[in-house]
Length: 315
Ligand code: UT7
Image (tube, rainbow, N blue to C red; front, side, top):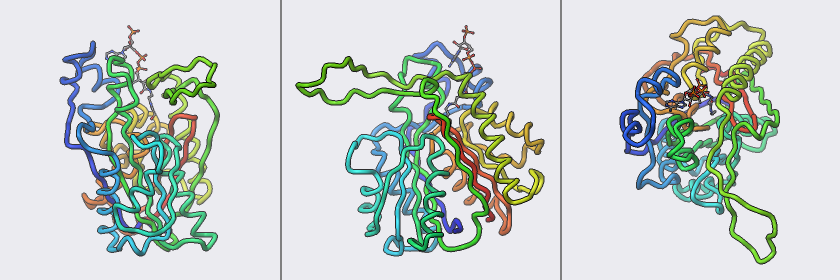
C-alpha cells in the first residue's frame, strides 16, 4: 500500500509544565530535562470520538478521497469512554462510510500494528483503501497526583489513508509479555456472583524498565526492517519515532549513528499520546512539506505489553 493522506486533531487545552507544578511536586526544569516535554494537549470538554472523526476527515481530504471509497477502517485505541460500540464504528458513522471496521489495542505501537493489518488485508486481495485512525486519551488513565506518570502524557488523534501502491517496504512487529511494567486495572460493574477482590488502579509504570525496553526494542525493530530491505541506516531519510521521551529518541539515534535532523520530534508540545504519536507526527511533517517524493521513512513505536514494531516506507 501507500500512504495517500494524513490528518490529525488535538484538544484545545494546552497544559504547560508550569501549570503542573502548581499542584504537583515537579518543575518545568525536571520535566524538560528528563523527558523533553514542555506542554501537552489535554482533553477537557471534547469527546475523543470527535477528535478521531476530525482527524479521519482531514486524512481523507488530504488523500483527495471520500468516505464511500473506503473498504475498511481500523482504529487503534487503548481507552475511551465507550466500552462498546467500538470507536471505529463511531468514526464510520461520523465520516459517512459504510465499510467494515475494527478496533485494536496494541498500546503505543497500535498505529504500526494497524498498518500491518491493512497491508495484510490488501495483499490478500480483501481491500483497496483503508483508513487507519489512532485516537488516544492517556490523560484519563493516569493518577494526576502521581508526578512520575501524569507529566508524560497528552491526548489527540492521528489518521492515515492507505491506498494501493508499493510504498510500504517492510513491517516488523514484536511482543514480549511483561505485564508488571506498564499497566492499569479498571473496575468492572459488580455482579451478585463476584467473590474475588477487585480494585481500580490508575496507570502504573516502572519507568526505567520501560525506558530500557524501548531503546532495545526500537533498535532491534529498525535493524530488522533495514536488513529486510538490504539497506543501512544512512539510506533512511527520516526516522519518525514514538514520542515517549526525548532521551529515548536520542538513545535510538545514537544506536543508529544518525544525525539529529533525521529525527523530527513534536514531544516538546505534545508529550506522549500513545499510538497517536506516530500518525500525528507523520501528519505534521507531511503538512510542513518535510517529505520529498521517494524519501525513505522508518517509523518505530513501543508500548505496554510489551509490544513494538517498525515500518519502512517510501513517501
Ligand atoms: O509509551 C511508553 C510509555 N512510557 C515510557 O516510555 C516511559 C519510559 N521511562 C521514562 O521516560 C523515564 O523513566 C521517566 C521520565 C518516567 C522517569 O525518568 P528517570 O530519569 O527514569 O527518573 P527516575 O524514575 O529514576 O526518578 C528520578 C527521581 C526520583 O526521585 P528520587 O527517588 O531520586 O528522590 C523521582 O521521584 O526523579 C523523581 N521524579 C520527579 N521529580 C520531579 C519522578 N518524576 C518526577 C517529576 N518531577 N515529574
